[in-house]
Image 1: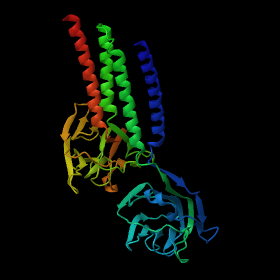
Image 2 (image 1 turned 60 degrees about the vertical axis):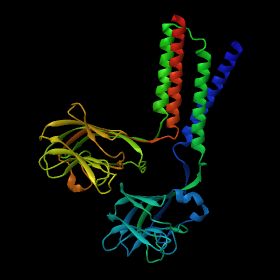
Image 3 (image 1 turned 90 degrees about the horizontal axis):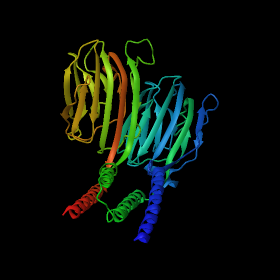
Image 4 (image 1 turned 60 degrees about the horizontal axis):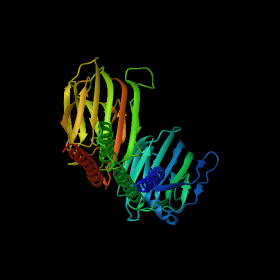
Length: 452
């Protein structure tokens, strides 16, 4: 029996370090399913040369590039030339290019896909001599276009050519760009991990965990002595193991972000706090997954116009926002993803001017929304969908400039998680519960044998 026990301890020791090795390996690859490669940054200035800067890159040579393809740069316009192009990706009008209209000064991302569909995505007016930033991400037939911090999302754009990239000119010499282009960079997907990598790691981890559990059961349960200390220790171990199995292993955290603003004051002369705050969450383009969100802040109302928004988590009615109507009632508007185009509203109560309020909002993966005002117990509201967007967060304003909040906001904090149920959730539930039941039955058996 002693030799068997030593052998089990050796196996247990080896399994433990194998599990640690798998955790380290998983931590290195779980951030991205694919790896990106960057082309060296390039610059262009019309004050130095009117010859376009060429970048040798043909997407045909990189089959995985269409899984993730990104262009980012900064630019400054010195003079509005006729249909000047900041960059192009193809020789003819069959790729992707950014164009500036010389009459309206509006910037437009133009794409002609292989189906001969001309798609235009306007970004707004370009200010002369101002430095603008652009990021264009193409993945899964979708473009995420971010211009000066604001994002436009498009879908079903189709395929387009990337074979001859020019900076400072379009597909003919009449489309010269007069200005500067800084830090032009291309990222593309170079390689992808094998599809089964993550699932294999999960399977190995689960097998190791339960091998360890059953080895422990083999070592300790047959030699179990009926003492109060043993009962407490082993019961505690059983509870911990069950808790870990039922809670920690059933979800994979895909995104965990936090956003904090110490102060906003619409009446302040300090430009650092008198303008609405904006934050884009880059990682939340994940749909139909369970989400946890917690929002808390203090606020005071100076004046009310109509539809003043204290904060929002997404444009229009795709997320959650706090809104005041002209009568002073506080309400929350949320997305109703079960019926596109519709929204859900919860009216809380009428608020007074120049009075400080504290609010906390919690939404987890259940179909409930919990709201607390002035530290009172949470009120629960039925929310019939599990999905909402947290991507374009504003504090002190809603989705347009007419919805600016007239007052003060302090200690605004939002934490957000995106979680997905792992395919092994039910297995963990069953096995951990099975282990705990077996352990409790063994304790009961010892008690019965001892006293009866």
